[in-house]
Length: 250
Image (cartoon, rainbow, N blue to C red; front, side, top):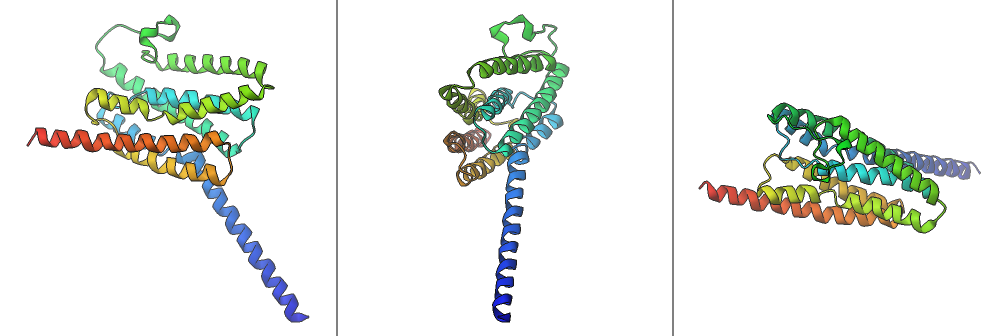
């Protein structure tokens, strides 16, 4: 009887330790999902601060992430997925606004032109090329209010909810496309932080595994797979353009 009691106690302690360890690992994974997405933008932020030049970074990356994460937030109201992913969206929105603020400050200090472009001009030629950070805030608020009204009216329609989710993750999957195009346009990756792209790739791999293991809606892990492919394409640009620059100066 004593031996059985000891065996039961040891089994209970083993299960308890296993549960604690699993809870700790789950907490760490959630923490990395929420704040790990910010990490790729720290090297880019410091690169812009150090050089005083934002031309190598495509601010359309910020546009993609802002739109995608605002839509993802509204998707949550229609289909309650992991709360961790909702917090990730909130943190990412704050990060993108901080990066935009830096880009606006740097460009305003370096531009000699007196011409100014504002969101309230509603001029499509200068969309996302406004002169002040406040204009980007106005766009985000306007887009959020529009999404709020549409979601409120159509929240009970499952097709709308699923389409909203696909739109959010599809736009997020295109995250690297503006930078891919910027590099192609410049025929160079100078001014782009390679560390940022490396962290993008590692984060996308981690996110995709997380999405699959947590059984999140299929939209999420499809997004992760597409992002990984785009990250690889940007690394190919880094190799190609820098190889060409070396040959040019030899």
